[in-house]
Length: 561
Image (cartoon, rainbow, N blue to C red; front, side):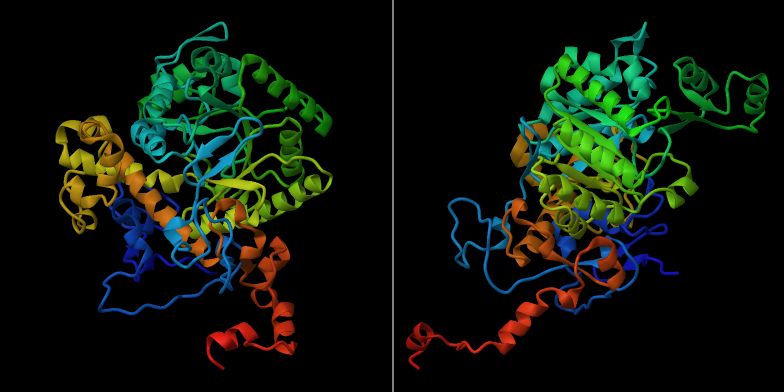
């Protein structure tokens, strides 16, 4: 059985735990002291694109693209002439066709376009305590860079301070904190999305947001995610909190109202409770019924005033995928996030994560196929976001190419959370008075951090870029986790620009499926992306069999032939 390597000597990265195909550890800890590629990139930024110890080393690739079917078994094309998609005002001269001039801005939407400075967005950060603890870093970082962030399900329902009376929210402090934190630094790029699941719909979350925030917020309907095929979960260690959640209408396992469960908890045999959400559409039995209810839900949200509505779906299989694409397109939604198995989660059953659903690359390949069927009929296809175990700049490029021209943005979950954890841990050490506020986990800086410096200005390559944007005075209020997110995204951006320059595509909209090829025949079969040596093979043979002169008359004159 093939296992992804735990270390990369070339860039000095080492995984603490077992790495997934994303390159992240299968278990990512908020208190981790390093040092995976994402961890290092959150401090050193684009320097991690290159081999370490320049001047005393040479390095070579460990090519594993011939193994299995995953995003890592796709390879990125390269061309030796031409350039397309240059930003306005630039020419095709070698002086203009440089990778820093590649535009990686993108946009999605039907009538109202949502702009993003980079083609990434976060996954849903919902009712898990991780999301709540590190929200300031996540939200400020996303807003400062200018990419969308998603508030996940159940945030109001699990908030002890929220007040819900007769199905109507009277008070929702945690939800408001999250929205307001993002809007503080929002400058027109990016967006704040709020998800709705069964409980959120019952609790009147959409009505509350519409009344308080209007079209500043995008509403997202949720069918599921790639990590699980049941509703969302959190774990609580307090009997009182478990009883509170039970009274709020959630499924709590084991049942905290049972005397025998309470006795087991008091004696330490049961130490925690799992809160679960409900499955949607359980009272429906046909595709037609699902579509009717879905379209009614969209119509109701539009009546509330939401101009932008999106849908998040999980890896339910081909029927579910087709329904999501068709219904979202018919409803003129602004974005459909397609989350394949292999993605991350806060607390889903482990063996469920390991064994259920359609792996990301397979789901995304079929999404392109199904979208093409609708497009061939002349229908406008909803814009896609691909999600599920994507963490690096090569993943971003490959996913955009695999779904082109329908995929506009890539949804990244755990990868953009890591810098939030890291920054908070560093801030907790360097500013001990803020350790509890930022949820820092360290008492001192580990060697994986001190190798870069001892102050924030020394540690984060993006520190002064952020300061330039917000000013020296406001910089005092910026969480270190947000600076780390900026720094990581700068690395992802530079790496993506380099790949795009290599395929001579200078804007996101120019990326196509022709820009990737399959590293093995099995990947070719499953994705319909041609195998490496088949790509342009006929063109190559035409060149070899042609009779044209390699040096034309104009060239001869220039070279004084």
